[in-house]
Image (cartoon, rainbow, N blue to C red; front, side):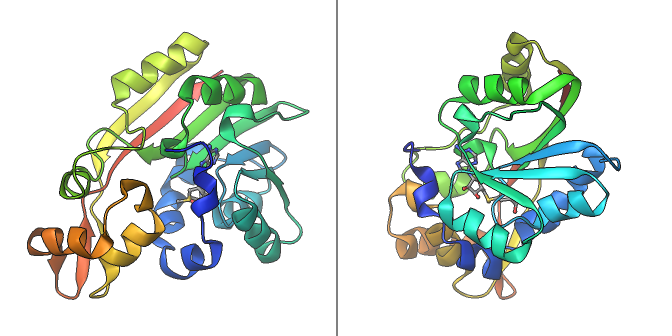
Length: 234
Ligand SMILES: C[S@@+](CC[C@H](N)C(=O)[O-])C[C@H]1O[C@@H](n2cnc3c(N)ncnc32)[C@H](O)[C@@H]1O
C-alpha cells in the first residue's frame, strides 16, 4: 500500500454502503470492555461509529485517522467527540491512554514496527491494546482473481504476536477466524473493489466476473474475509 493510502477514502460512500465494518466491530468492543472514566484511543476510527459506541460506555475517547475525509465525517457525525488526523506509524498522544482500540484499519499500515512502537508509546504501563483486522488468508480468492499481488498486511497470529512481543507487549489473546462477509446487490463486488480494492489495480468488473460463480448467491456476494483479533498488555 502506498504511504498515502488514506487518500483513497470516500467517507460518504463508506458510511452509506459499508456499515457492516463497524457492525462486526461491536464484538471487538466487548473484548475491549471499556469502563467509565477510562481514556481510550480508537486508531483508524474512520467515520467514528465505534468511537461513539466506546464513548457511550463512559470512556473518554480520542478518534485518530490519517484521512481528512474520514475525520471530517466523524466530526460531523459526533461533534462532541475528539477526532484527530494522524497516521498509526507516527501517532503521538500527549497523555498515555488506558487502552488503544483498532478495528479494520491496521492491515492498511505500511510500517508495522513503527505503528506498534507508537501504540506502545500511546499506552500507560498495563494499558490494553485490542485490535481486529485482516488476518492471514484474508480475501485470498479476491487477491488471486486480481492477479495475486497483496498490497496489505494480513499476518498470522504467530507473526503478529512476535512483532508485539518484540516491542515488549504481553499477548494475552489471539485468534484467526473466517468471517464470511455478505455484500448485498448485483454490483456489490464491484462496489467493494471500488471502495477497498483499488490497491489491487485491476478492473473491478473483470475481477467480479471471475469471482461471480463462487461468491455470488441469492442477490449478494459472500466475501472470504478472515480476521485476526488480538488483546495485548503494555
Ligand atoms: C475500513 S475503515 C474502518 C474504520 C473504523 N475503524 C470502523 O470500524 O468503521 C479503515 C480505516 O483505516 C484508516 N487507515 C488507513 N491507513 C491508516 C494508517 N496508516 N493509520 C491509521 N489508520 C489508517 C482509513 O483511513 C480508514 O478510515
